[in-house]
Each structure stands twice: as structure tokens, then as C-alpha cells.
Length: 237
Image 1 (cartoon, rainbow, N blue to C red):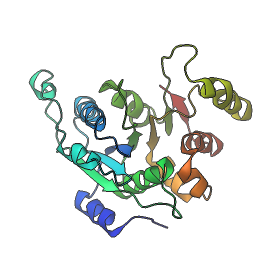
Image 2: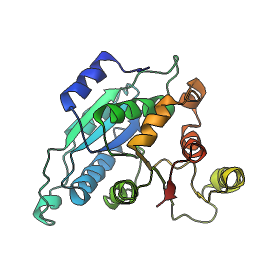
Image 3: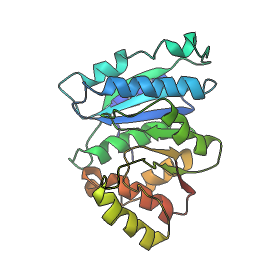
Image 4: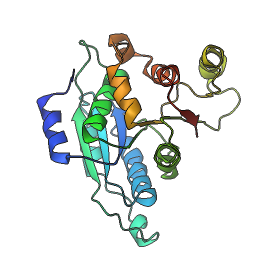
């Protein structure tokens, strides 16, 4: 069943449908989210100019104006002036406050709303990025969405270039456990940036393990393991 509020349903109705969506979960990220939105918009326009794009911010009711930053952040001028890319469709930017799952907020609840919106808009590919990224560049959107739109994959995990002692929990627990359980060499099974196909989005919404625990913590590894466990085509980029 849907958890969407009337306000969100109304926004979905206004948007109609889209081909590709970038979802950004957030809470009090006004200082950093503008940079992420700008890079996401540039990536959508630069690499997928013929698709109908939408950027959706799923926010926890931030008091610092995070949502306003998302809606007011324009794509960088260089896209049209230097790259001479003229997008076919107008890029929509939306910021919404997500409903909690069984009274529980958190990243999982934010992503549930993003999945429901992506499903309602019938997008072919959903890319999700964190709202406090400093390293994101437009190319990330192409690297994450490309394997789904062009390669037939369903879940695209990130493969970060990191210092050897970074990501201790990932290297010591999450990766070895994923490898042992499924034989899958997904180096970053709890990465904050990923992409999902329409089929997998639909499946996520059907799974009864998407509960209040998942909503609070563990959403990243739940998505990776569910994708592998359900037999979807998984890759890393």
C-alpha cells in the first residue's frame, strides 16, 4: 500500500511521468545540497538530453531551508554554452517532506518515498545520491544510470576510489559478508550512491522486509542484498 501524502500524490499528478530520476534524501543539508543538485542536473542534461528528467528531494522537514535550495538551484550555464547541449525536455526540481514508516523516520523512510514516486512516474532508471557529497561530478549520473539504460542491469552499486584504511566497516564486515553469503564481489554494498531499474523499484516496494527497522537503519545493505537475493542483474561502477 502507498504511504504517500495527498501533497505528494498531487505533485506526482502534476509531473505526469518521467524517464530518469535523481532522488536525494536529506535532513538539514542546505549548506551542501545545492552543489549536489547542480551536478545532478548537469549530468542529466549532458548525458541524457533526450530523456525526460526529474530531480526529487525527499526531505525530513528540515528547518534550514534545504527544500528551497533544491527548487532554486539552477543547472550550470556551461552545459548549453560550452557543450552546446539543448535538452529536449524541461528539467523538473521537486522537494517534498516524506511520511514516516510506522512512526519512524530516517534514510529508509526517505527512500521509500523516492521509490514510490519513481514507480508512479514510471521512470526507466532511478539514481540516488547523498545530500552532503563533496566529490560528485556530472559524470556520476551517467556512470550510475548508464548500465541500467544501456546495459540491462537492475542495480548499480558504487565502486569508490579510497585510501586503504577508509571504509573500515565496509572492508571488514559488509563486503566479506556479502561475498560469503552470495558469492558477489560488490565492494561497496553499503554505498550511498546507487541506481535502480523500474523492475527492481517495483520489487522493493513489494517486499515485506521493508519495515520500520529498514526505515531506521540498514537500508543500503538491504537494497544490495535484496537485489542479489531476488535474482536481479547487479553490477558496480
